[in-house]
Amino acid sequence: MTNMREKLVHLITVDDLSSVQMFSSKLGISQEEVRILLTELTQEGTLDGYLTEDEERYFRHDAKVSEAPVIHRKESIPDFMKFDTRPGRIAAIFGLALATIGAYGLMNAGDNLEMENISAVLTLIGVVVTIAGAFYLTMRKTPS
Image (cartoon, rainbow, N blue to C red; front, side, top):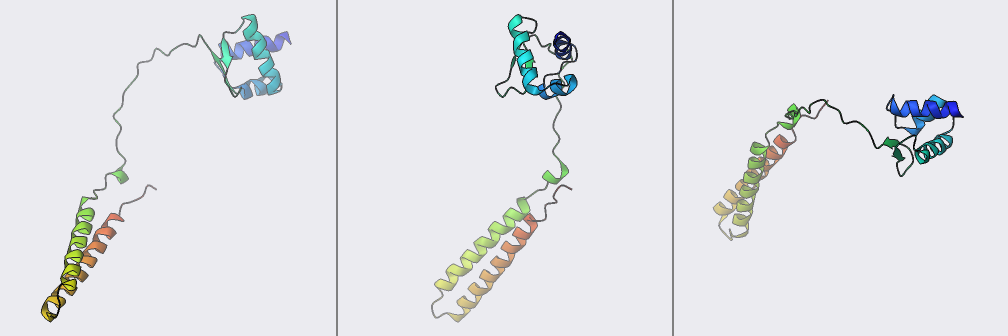
């Protein structure tokens, strides 16, 4: 058992492993036995760390912070996200406005046949423009 304890300490301190599952597979013992060994080694003072709440990882308190500088990179937007939706939205809103004006004209045309015809054409044109704007919005390419 002393050999297992030494191997476990080596895996944690030298190899920088933290997964109880990895300890179990490397040592050839069950995960529960690894947890018991970790608890014993921590209580003895051989290891300075703690098991996580789910008891799947063991973290050292004296973990070293990397000395490598942090490189901040500007995130580039993927090509499929660069799609400009403004023309489609403008066309759809303009089409809805035309259809609304045409419908209002139809409701208030009364007995005026010429006004009724113009309003009906305006409503149909508005619907077509709205559909064209919505179609444009659906043309965004998806990532492959």
